[in-house]
Length: 291
Image (cartoon, rainbow, N blue to C red; front, top):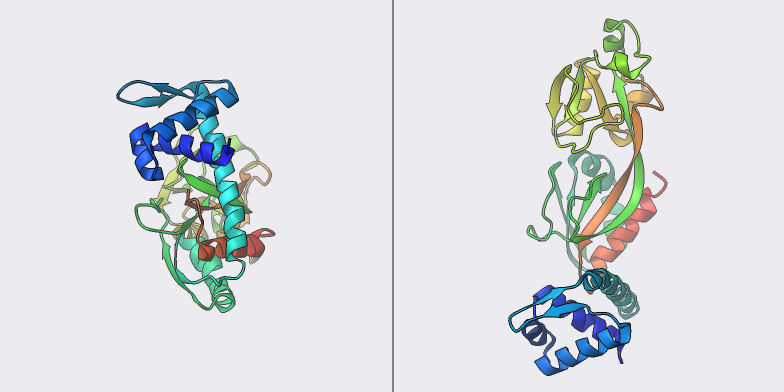
């Protein structure tokens, strides 16, 4: 039997919650769909679906096999797409969602090079520090720092950045010197990132620092407050690196109050990824993998 065709049929039934809907989507008869499923289960020697007269539901084995099928079909579609598109030129409007700071400091500066390489691609970059439903908003891809936010999207890591806790020299002087332990840090005023969903490495729970002086949903705003001595801020290196290098901020508790954070590009689960999207993802990996 044609295993790829069987996988496609099984995925269509699972995603459309029934044989009739899957047959309509695939453009074939219900009998063919039902027969294909039976042959597939016979081949695997396991029941993938519980069938009733009204609906079908996945068995435990079916749930596991569904993810396997999606991965195989995605890989196959990608290879076919690469072969088919070798002679084509990327074109069309590429819609990108990006965090504000990373977008302005890193993506925008390299966009001219990307657009010079692919002159038929137009770019619409929307920058916000809030999670965006890229499918609902019609985006081709999104850049995320750390958290991915959705299990329904394809995720590819393209770089890493280091988060560090830093404070202005004026604040360090005011506090009588740098903290030597996490316990001492509890007395320090801090500036929190309001969209962070997990606790920083020196805290056991998110938001348990009673000395929090300010919070913001934007890293650049946190940087300005930290440089003014309002509090210590925990930020990625692509935001605070220059301030640390030039002495406007000093790292606190190095090796303790820090962590490596992955940077991801996310895009919708599609059988054939648009060439404009594919080349931009490859471009991001090339530009930032050694960040």
